[in-house]
Every structure is written in structure tokens, then in C-alpha cells.
Image 1 (cartoon, rainbow, N blue to C red):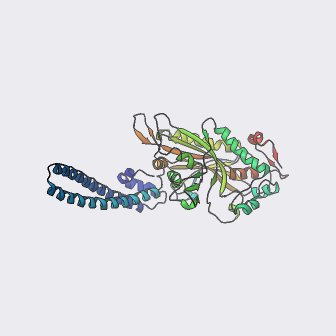
Image 2: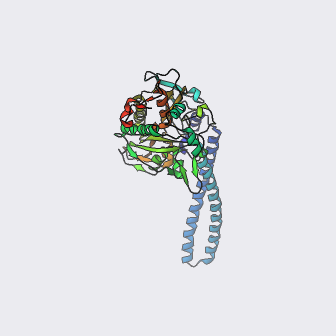
Image 3: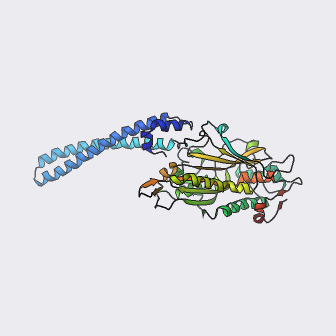
Length: 423
């Protein structure tokens, strides 16, 4: 959520930045107009309430002097003022609802130096490394085919149980998922406190992070109560700090959590959605930080390096994208994607998004801190996928397959797997 004062005092600059995210800025003009109108309503209300308070005191004085006739006259004036107040309060409340709805709809402002673009075609590759382990097989199989042959991945059984775009891992395939999660924890355990949060959250929790109300159709909702399945551990981790004010020096806060993530991924049946390329449910370790604005650049770099390190350790070919303004998503101020190459499906697969949200989420969640001068200010939040397992799993299976049909286990995972070869 943007600061309403920023919108009203710097409307043209804000609109210019929002246009970089392909946002219809006429909504901003309507919001500012409604906000200014409501300020006048608020001023009228304060004036009428002041008049009413003065008349109420006058009634008390007149009643003490037994001036009952004058008391009745003033009471009629109070009734008339109360009616005006009631009408204005209704008008104020209606305008406030429109303002809140508009604020929840407006995306976060991108950083001014973020690449300007319309969609993913305009993203910029800022780093590329293909010097790591290369698949020794001339025509590598896609992960869903080799996984089926080795009986470690069963897409058909998953579909039988849950429908399309779900996954089922078996034997050493399931062990590989756990190994990836465990290795991610090992890499980050010194910096981050591990959390195991609930997988169900309230509407308010999803609203804090910007997933609601705008993106309700992307979420899974329980119909009988106010519960939603989490799309990412970012939601419970962030919501846990809602309405918190940190003392001076307590930030940054660093948390990591392993959860299952649930998403209504768009897409029809086809090769680009087959297997683990796009699924509704997956296992993931999320890294989250709450920082002071001055700490943002340093902490974001540290967060990014933590998310990239595991990909380096797995020796997968990777590239890093600096996402353009039109593709970074509503809540981001800046976002970087880490992609790995999967030689079986011959595609680059996004395995981690790392970025910061400036004060967008913290303003929604009222997450604040006391600065060195004793002032209360809104914090910044940031997060990244420390390990989103499906596509990393797919890239490992495809990259490390051998000519005899087996899978070589990446060196860094051998101790976690208890074997060097999957066959």
C-alpha cells in the first residue's frame, strides 16, 4: 500500500512510475479527488462536533438556571446538528471505503533505476553462467520421462489423486526433495531463524502481503471459514510481524520457513506445463527479512547471494534476470529472477524470485521501527525463494542423467541422499 500523502503531494511523479508498471493512472486521479473531498467532509464533521459540544455545555448551564424554554430551543439545534453529522459520517465512511479499495488496487512503485519494459521479453540478463556441469547425454530426456523410467516420479498417479498439474515423488525422488530442503537450511541456518508456520492463514494475513484483495482468484480458499491455503511462506512470516514496532537497533529481522505452497497456476495442458514446470502445490523454503530503508541495498544483496549459492553448489547452469517494471509484479519495487537450464525440456526455468517491497507490505501490516532519532517509521520487507524444489528437482534430473539411464547425485547432496547414483 502506498502512502496516501505521497499520492496527494507528488501525484504526477507517482503516476509516472506507475505507468512503468502498465497501471491505469486514472485511478490515481480518482483517488486523489475522493481523498481531497473527504478531507473537506472531515473538516465539516469536526466543526459540527465542536458546535455540538459547545451547545451541550450551554444546555447544562441553562438547565442549572432553570431556563427550560431556552434549553428546548438549543436541544432542537443539537438534533439538527446530529442529523447533519449522521449524514456526513455516512458520506465520509463511503468515501473512506472507496479510498481504501483504490489504495489496495494500486501497485507498489518500482525503483526509479529499474529497467522499463512491458513484459518478460524486456527483462535483462545481468549474469549468465554455463560453465558448470553439462549433461553427458546427447539427447537428454525430460525429467517426467526419466523420472517415470526410474520410478521416482509419477505424474499419472498424481493426476489420478488430485487432477492435473500436481506431482508425486517416490523413493529416491522423494528423498531428493528432502535433500534440497535440508541443504538449503544448512546454508542459511547461521543467518536466519527457522520457522514452521501454519499453512492456513486469514484474509487479513493475505491482505498484508498484497495477495488480497486484488489477486483472490489466484489463491485457494476454504469455503466454510476465513482460511486460505498459503501461496508462499512469505505470507505467515510477514503477517506474524503485523502491528509490531521494533525498537531502535532490532532490525534487520531474518526468518526462513519450509512449507508447502499452493497456487492456482494458469495454463493449459501442454509440454510447457508438463511435469514439474508448472504445478499447483510444491515444497519450498522461503527467506524473509524486515529491514530499515538504509539497510535495504546491503541486505537485499545478501539475500540474493544466499538464494543463488545453492544453485552454484548444485553446479546447474544458471542465469540472472533483472525484471523490467512491467513484469516484476504489483508488490515489488525491484525484483531479480534466478533461472536454471533444464536440457531435457530445453528451457530456462525460474527457480527463485528475490526482491524487496519497500514499505508496501509493511504499511499494510503496520510494521514499524524506531529510528536512531526516536521517530516511528515504516519498515521495509524483502524475500526470496531459498529453495523452490520442483524446477530445481527437474533441472537436476535432466542435467545429471547418464547414458545408462541413471542419475548422478550432485556432490553437495550425496551425504543427504546416502547415495551417489539414482538408478
